[in-house]
Length: 206
Image (tube, rainbow, N blue to C red; front, side, top):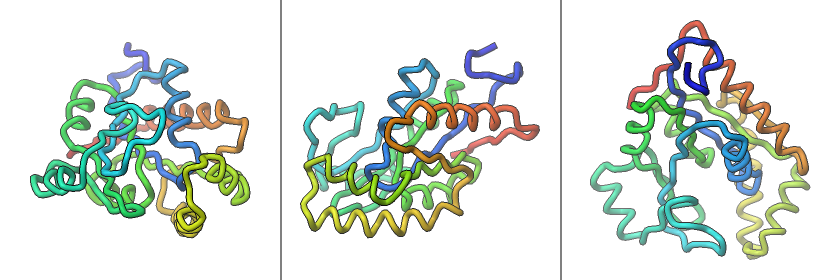
């Protein structure tokens, strides 16, 4: 049976939507899951914001101009999109359909606003909220980026407070304290195992 089938039956691929406040560690969680050998397809988000140091085109994001992004919206090529801190972010549709059809689980990293939109389009997805251990820890993580102006930091913290209030809209919550990333990955793997052992598997149709 396939490696990602814990219940010894024909697997139904999952669409996992991982969300949470900026700076909570969504990218690190997904990167560690891959390092530990779990097979999945990671959906790459398109964004109109400039590339940050160390980011790679096609791995971290698809970097496009605002004009190119608006053209993608007009042609109906995005599953969801939003204007976030003055820049566009959105999820291309085609790669998700292709990956699910191949039998791979698909993981998406989106903000809370984007998760709400996807919930309306794909209610059978699995929605996971990644939360900080505390507001103080989240502030420290954002400050450590050294890429936030005081005004941007204030905006992100205000947004984070609202996002934390939306936890009730998600299926699961995982807390991600500093130094406990592998524990968070273990919890995500437990969620995946439980979902694959459901009597009535989720079936995502896009």
